[in-house]
Image 1 (spheres, rainbow, N blue to C red):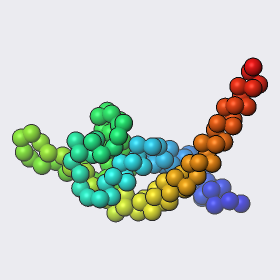
Image 2 (cartoon, rainbow, N blue to C red):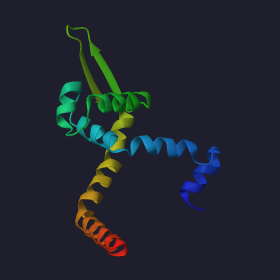
Image 3 (tube, helix red, strand yellow):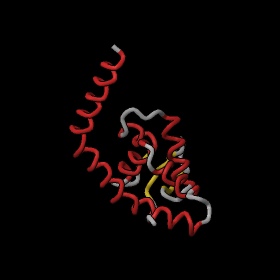
Image 4 (cartoon, rainbow, N blue to C red):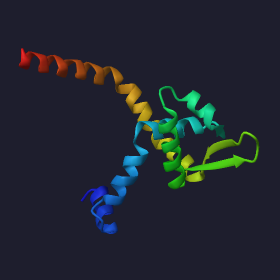
Length: 129
């Protein structure tokens, strides 16, 4: 029995909870936000500037989900205009090693994956033509 199967049996939910957590944690924006917050407490606008391609809406949704799950703490400063900062909680910090390991794996295997994708696309074109 795998660790995953064992976990599903213990919880009695067939892995539903585990899949929901992994779905949230493993999306591309969550990992980028967590990695960016590793450095320090960051203001919303600075965070948006440091994550290329993320929209204001997607950053807001991602931060809300991370705050809901206890991975990020949001601090609002009573200023005009309000200053909002985000930082990782201890639980969020504990996500960094596996997230960085996954990113390292991806970087290490980019050449192989790109080569495989090109071969697959070529094979698909040959089947069509």
